[in-house]
Length: 82
Image 1 (cartoon, rainbow, N blue to C red):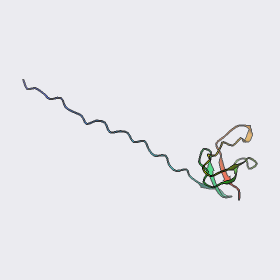
Image 2: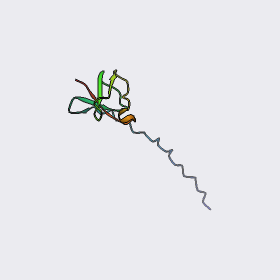
Image 3: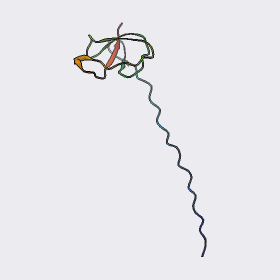
Image 4: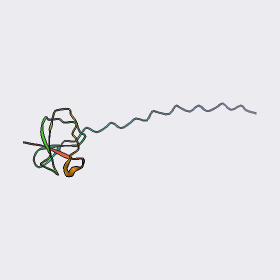
């Protein structure tokens, strides 16, 4: 009988996690805009695209909050006031 050597398998390659995409700065009709949860890239006063009366003052690097329009929080497109 011929003795068989155990077959050695290569160790599994580590799974690389996809890198998160940089936040998109969208161009709204009024000016630069950013979504809830994205970091602020330009300090200033922003308003919600769905509720223009809801405004937030943002500092560079802070994350945008949800809008509290209609007495409930929702993900918003925040537009920089000119």
